[in-house]
Length: 386
Image 1 (cartoon, helix red, strand yellow):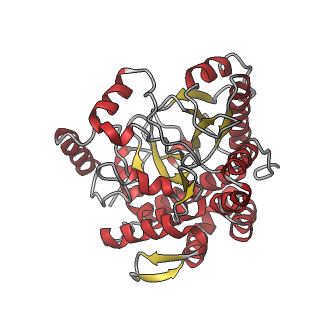
Image 2 (cartoon, helix red, strand yellow):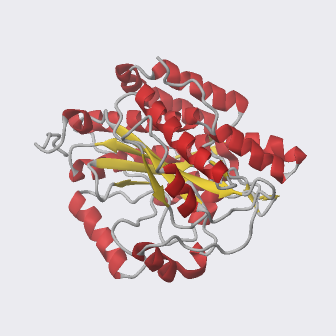
């Protein structure tokens, strides 16, 4: 059993799962063609000179020169998180326009089939050498949520509790149906592209931080990971922060969608912490059934069939979403987020995921999809406003 205690260097909000942060990855696309453009360095340089309304938010390069990232600081409320997300998008979108590009939040490019230059830096170069052709045009983008935990043993135990819910978080975020201008038939093509890398998907059940660290070290030693920071699992203990990092979601279209992922992720972590405090460890679940759940979520999104990880049978993905919401309702009530989350979930279920919005826009051609994505990326919507 994991004993929950607060080390002296970790503040209480982090230790009890109240603190969170979000990293959003974006694409830079040409307005006239919709093709990815490698202007990340210029966009980041210009954006860094723009006054930040949220000083804790930071901007970063990503693997390829067609991608940029905005990371919030540590937040304890959805309102603060929303402010920081909007600020990162505002600064990057304005800089992108000034450099003749569109900032787009999407799991994978709608158009484009040419290899892209890797961003500068020794680590990026090592990644390119290690994975070769896999990363030559790897422009997948995600929405990553960090939630605070007291220590690494607790982080590993929390990840064990998260495993069953990761396909549902993916299904709710699906926002990448296209590749090279064609509809792949998948709600999240990003997830399929990521499966080219070694490992990935739902993380393995690990009994301790020591066991987790040993597994990652062996994978590095085997040459399939460049270092301990580069695991491909959909949730993992952070390598450098006192957090659990949830990486299931596609880069989502709107700030509402990003805040929804953060609110659900925080509620799942807080529920896991409560379970562990009560002495309840995560149940062992079949890895192949969980993999089937990920595939179904990637294929169909939230509007199709899913796989129940405990009953090991097909069920509607919305039923799995209902189970998730019931599971985290006490945590959402405690944080005051329940009404906002229910409203946002209803909006996705009735109005469609990002993939559904893209497919509707595609009736007017792929360039219409690109411009819709750019518009949604900068849309200031309502969740988290007091």
